[in-house]
Image 1 (spheres, rainbow, N blue to C red):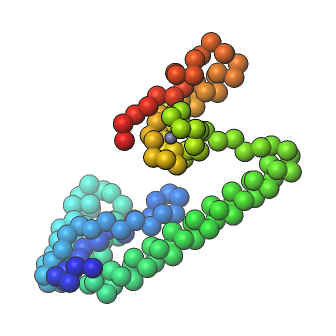
Image 2: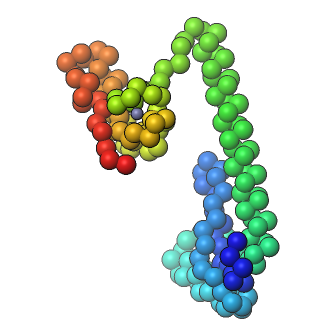
Length: 159
Ligand SMILES: [Zn+2]
C-alpha cells in the first residue's frame, strides 16, 4: 500500500455473477476533495438517468477492509465453483462419461479458456503458456463433417 495515499475514491460494483469489483477513481489529499469529486460523478449519473453507482471515499485502512471483503467473496465463489465441478465429475463418472479436454495444438497439454466470443470462438491458453484460438462451432461440426480439417479448428495467436 502506497503510504502517500490519504483518501481514495472507489467505485464498488457487483457483477451479475456475484463478482465484487473495486475500481479506483482517483486519490485525494483531503476527504472534502474526494467527497466533491464523488458528488460531481453522482450528479452526472443522475443527469443521465443511470442507476446510482456505489462510490465510496475511503482511507487506506477502510480500503484494506474492502479488499479483504473482496477476497472473501472471491474465495466463496471459487469454493462454490470447485464444489460444482466436483459434483459434475462424480455424476459423469457414474454415467461412465470421461472428461474431455481441449489440448494445445503445439504441445498437447490441457488448456483453459480465457475468453469466449459469440459464435463459440474461444481464446485459450495451455499449461505451457501457448495461446491459441479454438472454434467450438467448427469443432462440434467436425464430428459429423470430417471434411473440416483440423487446422481450421485450431489457429495459433500470438500472446
Ligand atoms: Zn502448448
